[in-house]
Amino acid sequence: MTPSSSTNIAISARGIQKKFGAVVAAADINIDIPHGQKLSLIGSNGAGKTTFVNMITGYIKPDAGSILLHDEDITGLAPRVVSRKGIARSFQIPQLYKELSVLDNMLVAVASQQPPLSFWRPARNAVAVQRAEELLQRFDLSEHSARLVGELPGGVRKLLDIAMALTRYPKVLLLDEPTSGVSADEKFPMMETVMRALSQEAVTVLFVEHDMDIVERFADRVIAFYSGRIIADDKPDVALSTPDVQRYVTGTLR
Amino acid sequence: MTMTTSSSSSAAASQNAYFYPALLLGLGSIIALLLIGLVIPKWLLFLVTIAAANGLVSLGIVILMRSGVVSFGQGMVFALGGYAAALAYGKLGITDALVLSLGGGLVAVILSAPFAYLIARYRGIFFAMLSLSLSMVLYGILIKSESMGGSDGFNMGRPTLFGIRAADEWSSYLNYAVTITLSGLCTLATYIYFNSTRGLVSLAARDNEIRVEYLGSSVQELIATNYLLAAFMGGMGGALAVIALGHIEPNFSYWTTSGEFVFVSILAGHYSVIAVFIASTVLEIVRSFSSLYFPNTWQLVLGLFLLAVIRFLPRGIGSLWEKRVKKQQQGERA
Image (cartoon, rainbow over all chains, first blue to last red):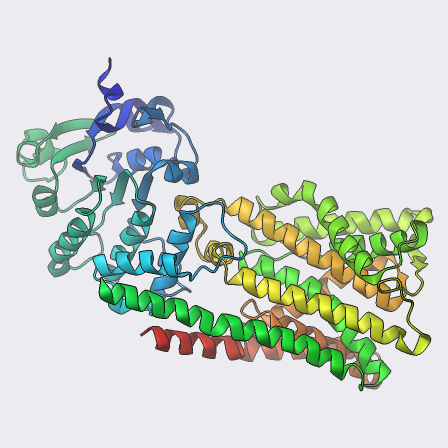
């Protein structure tokens, strides 16, 4: 029995390889992520973090290797299929519907979780609105419910982006740089809000992050990437103190 | 939690607060228009009939516009529906106006279906040009088909309704009544669709396709479905127009005909279903009066009119009242 076949493993990446021309984005990546773990992916720009996330969500197909979600092979499936199987994601630049209100953005997400989409069932039905408002409340977004997304500040957009990803009760949630573009003062309160909201869900969280204080505080485990390879995989305090991470990621050792 | 429940029930109540009045307003408008038709002059009766039939085709384009694409080839389904109705009348002896109209829509859907998934892969100008090319292929086939009258087309007799053939003086009214009823019901159905879960996700796809896909829906499937809905409306519009005109010709599928439907859709915007029929009626009125007073330059008048609308109402006529309704709803929610 391989480690990946254990039902406690939410995501198992086996021998993942990906090249963009001469650039190696993933060189034989092997990662097992246990259910319920909060894993942070760190690394400098171009290290392969987002490529790894994109391969899990089906946006990019790996050249070789396989990705399993609770023992089911999801390698190369389209993003919508991966999403239906239980992997949700938020984006570095929040992917929202700017012409719609915050509540309507949530209602799009809620509507999408009940395929097939109905031609006559009102989008603003009581059950959908209740689920949308419950999530907005959990992310402290209720006061923005009627506002158009185009009018919202960056931090609120980030929270909405994550709240939308949660509507499908995902097994795994991927957060791509959840605090990027958010002011230093707002980062910790924002992540506190996110983690408090996620604590009510039995969800495995994988987040890409550049702020090492955030990583140290909120991650159970850290994987550091460099040139498409894993250079550290351990608890935050241990991983962040390894020479390779200090040299290639945090830049504290030269 | 209490707050959530109460606010959600208020939001649901707010949904009902404008949904049922709209339903009543729609049905009331159909009845009112049917009554008005009894007193307006014949020329206006015909003008509104054609405007409503053409408006149906433009309504189909508006459905597509809401999912982020514009068809420049709705003349194809317009012609398919028209030819289907005229051929069913002439060759099969089917004379009922309702059957001919619904049949026209159905034939347009069946013949458009093989292209739906293919065309739904394209966006922007590529979608527009591909739809245009399909309509021009049909135009080329029709103009060369002597069995269907070639470039002259062929005539169609007066229809019946539930087995009754209307007397001469009521013939125009019968066409008007069928067209208004079917257009009104399609408008109501489209309104319900726009407010449905699929309608909302379609609108979201216009704004951000990536997110729609990551939330688990297929944008290609959404657009393909909307393309078929637009085909049904276009086909029905074609059949109704042929019933009113009593004649069909390949020009139904010509690019300038498709252009007029797009013109009406832009004029209306994608915010309101009623606006489409207002825009279509405005086009017919401008066309009628301009061709009377400026026979050689009426297209110039039409162009200037469209420029003015784009300048002052870039989101179309419908944005005039839809903005107000949205603000009111946001106020209620807040």
